[in-house]
Length: 248
Image (cartoon, rainbow, N blue to C red; front, side):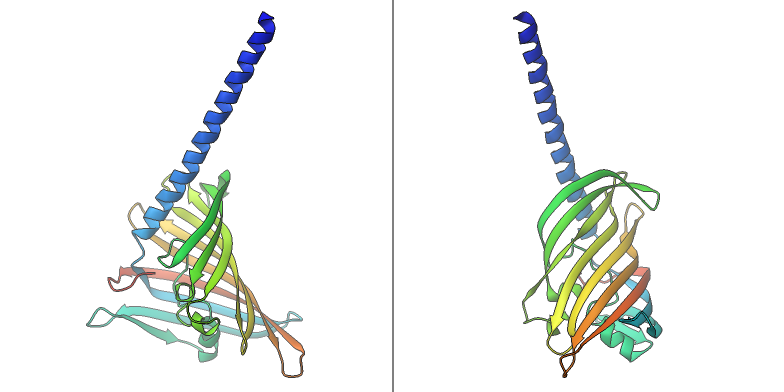
């Protein structure tokens, strides 16, 4: 009987330890997410002076149709209002304007509502940095993704986003973001968007440095046939400044 009670005691201790470890893991998961959110929130007003853009487009058969390079320059006028100058093909910017405004989008933006997030893995190596991986689901107001996205939905509608965030185990900042979402418009067609965004943090300023976007545009023609176009966009961001009137 004593041995049996001793075994029960070990089981109880094991169960207590398991509960404690689970609780600690849950606390870490929450605190790491909150720290990353705080760092991002402190840097929402940072704007890249320069966004270099490389755009390539192929048809359903994989044949390259277009390739453009461009430059987006952000600045401020005398009234500290954000200004935008686009250098390059207007055709490229017409398409880009449906899902980007030349600045990286991320889930901690002011108009984003995180519906759910879950700790996935506490040891993922990203660009030489050991990170914790989270899965997230979010709803976002149209203009938080792009200034012209309201043309895709009724004004005030929300877009659902799912993805993964990788948070540095060293300093608590987001190192990488992976996300995907869909857009639809009766005139343009439907977009399927996948994005990877890489960030840099120097202990004070947390900024996006490069964004890789791939997508498919499906458009139903007047004869009911379906036209498929694939595209890849690389955006590189540099020379950040603080625009007090701007908030992502």
